[in-house]
Length: 314
Length: 314
Ligand SMILES: Nc1ncnc2c1ncn2[C@@H]1O[C@H](COP(=O)(O)OP(=O)(O)OP(=O)(O)O)[C@@H](O)[C@H]1O
Ligand SMILES: [Mg+2]
Image (cartoon, rainbow over all chains, first blue to last red; front, side):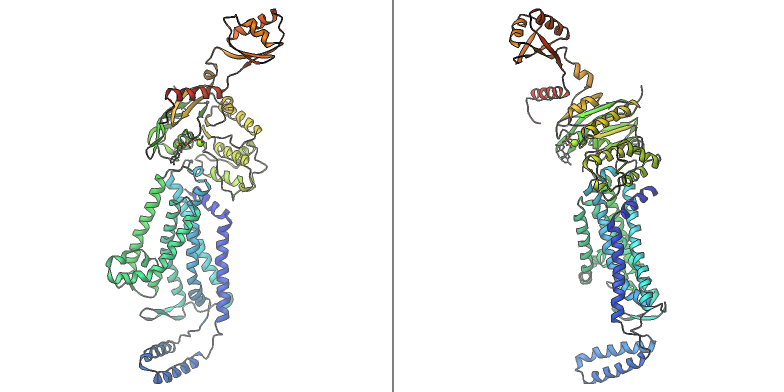
């Protein structure tokens, strides 16, 4: 098995595209660093005075505002007051803030690249006709497929690690080393959630991994279903796109129908649990994880059974 | 009695409602080169795909050196080296890396020296470190032969192995196959090139429309007839025909040219004719036996089949 995995990794890294994807991530992080360096102001040591002035101004405006706008002003004021009370500079910058605010959203890019690589994996062997040479070896089909899957997971983790390491280094160079446990407020459905910046980033990354696992499993399944690499990759990206846009729709659906809560889509983004404890009313993280696990098992079983039975007549 | 190198029993493949391979049985002895002949679409490749389990058998059994495909897949596959239709390679890797890839999949270790040895054998050692995408058709075919030989298999299964080889390459390949067979390695080879197969094979089977319609040794097939076609080159064919007309042993005289005629006779009659011609003052410049080619036999057998079946396509 080790030999099979090593083979698959060799093939993966002999392809130029695999290296290009890693470089794309690094470039994205660098560009992110440059842009956020440009737009973020120098941290003002007297930010408290500025904040107080802003609050007074808002209070003035609130007095003259019509009733329906009052609500908005009060919440604005509340928010700013919270920053003052907790002594959290909203414009603070550090490598950890950079990781949490700029690098974390780039996991979308990692997902996209991982989906491209996974859905091209088996379909490329079909498209190039190399699959027949691969399967006339003294190894069971499932073992060959499993070695492919494991090597893809290793590659996906390398993508994630590249993002984190590049993000940390770029953050360090542009913003300097900051306080790992600096307090921040993050916008959640039920108001501002207080968190420590470093742990919050790693929590989100940890919540991100299960979704990556399931989405790449879907892509891998597609790659065994289609003989055309382009088709498999196209449909893989399409599914990714649909799943990210369907979230809102499902929330509406789930209000009316109980079963909609068990569709895969609302559970694909677990990072929401970094901000709130429940989604869709009563679904908690363990339930989401269990639902994902069931879907994952189904995808994997389908993939392996189908591949084992398939006639290879290339 | 020793077990056969390859034993195929009642092999059948049905796709949809069509019987693509219909109850085919044959066996290949140790050290024998066995040819699979048949027109396009006869089912040769399908038979080979089933033997190496790229596609499922609808019915039938396959065993290699006594290892059964159903229970001893690994043992069986490690005895086989195969080319199925055009061999395809990972074009983005060098020939060497491709071979290394398959070497890693062997059960018995294949050393790096062995890889180079095989590369030299197929005369690819100069280009072995180039990427496969720079290879010509013939070079890829040679690499295909190399990957089949890599792990010292006891049975070679070669589907159209000379496809794309130049005459020199074909000759070297044939010599090499004979050398391998001499060492006790068995070969199952399919081809359209009948002249090629005639020189290559010890025994052969003819497949037509999925059915095995003929099986014999090459020798038997070539020597079936006592009588052979003989061409005489003489001073005047007209005079010769007049002389020979009365002879009972001489039948079916054909005048080919002013100075050439052919007869269909037994061996002993050739010298009788020669004496007759000389005693009748006809100069004899040359006598040549027209050897029956496998092509003649092939057409004879397949035509007979058509006649017997009334030319009806099932
Ligand atoms: N997957 C498939 N589905 C349906 N029919 C198929 C399939 N694969 C092969 N066939 C049919 O089976 C028949 C035999 O095909 P096969 O490739 O075995 O022929 P062959 O003897 O190797 O021919 P050739 O000499 O052209 O290589 C053909 O008529 C082909 O159309
Ligand atoms: Mg064929």
